[in-house]
Amino acid sequence: MRLRASDGSTAAIATAGSCGNSLAVDATSLYWIAETDSYTLKVMKVPLRGGDPTTIAEEQGGSGGITVDDTSVYWTTSLGAKAGVGAVMKLTPK
Image (cartoon, rainbow, N blue to C red; front, side, top):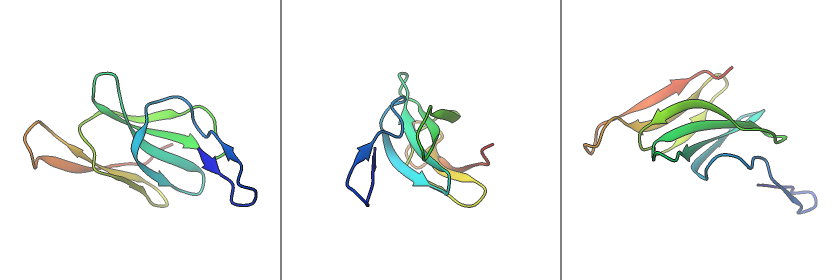
């Protein structure tokens, strides 16, 4: 959801995809981590004006967070069931 500061109105940005636990925003898009039906995670993207979400990375392990810069999206993921095994992932979306 988006809340407009000017008048307090709300609008849905995206209605597809599961709820996310982390959000990141750049000048044009909103990014989040969503849980799939198979309990793996995927990285999603939607334009700030709203629209259909796009999956930009699939079958990710558990996630701790997501951030963006001018060129890339970064997130953390676990690489297995063993605690403490993970990686920082990077993707330059199209």
